[in-house]
Amino acid sequence: MDANSSETSLPIDRERLKALQAPLKARYLDDPDSAVVTLHAEGSASQGVSCSLDVGRTLIDAGLHQAAGGDGSQACSGDMLLQALVACAGVTLRAVATSLGIPMKEARILAEGDIDFRGTLAVVKDAPVGFREIRLSILVDTEADPSTVAKLIELTERYCVVLQTLRSPVAVTTNYKLRARE
Image (cartoon, rainbow, N blue to C red; front, side, top):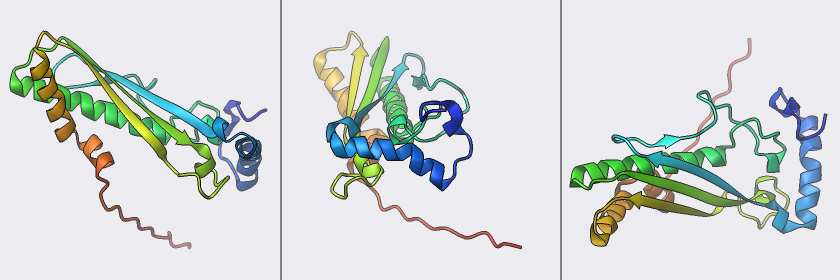
């Protein structure tokens, strides 16, 4: 099976992972632009204080992105981050519109972000690990005047937890414990 088969969703050992990623790393060294992938998430805020996202399934199985050796059958954590941003922005938008009494037929929320997989795969040390840039777009279907819509967007940005966390990162601590072997 090739690197694009569903075999990558099975348990994977160090050698298999290296074999899957080696051709990608080589390509990214030769062609740095090929390592830059734009991920997308989109949702719809059309009813209540909610936002609907199409994630393709109810149980999300996370795994490697294709640009890191995955086969595309599992959700990439980068996709999930963008989906969280879309969901939070959509819910916040609906909550603010409801709170301000702004009638809204629907809103489409789109997040996309660029990742340079040379950093993720340690191909070159100066390539960043993570998103280079994230773009959030909101299209609101409302009859409200432009100044009211501007206020709606301003407040949505202010109170969207995920957006604010991305804009002003918080301290994150990590810890681990080794499981005692018997």
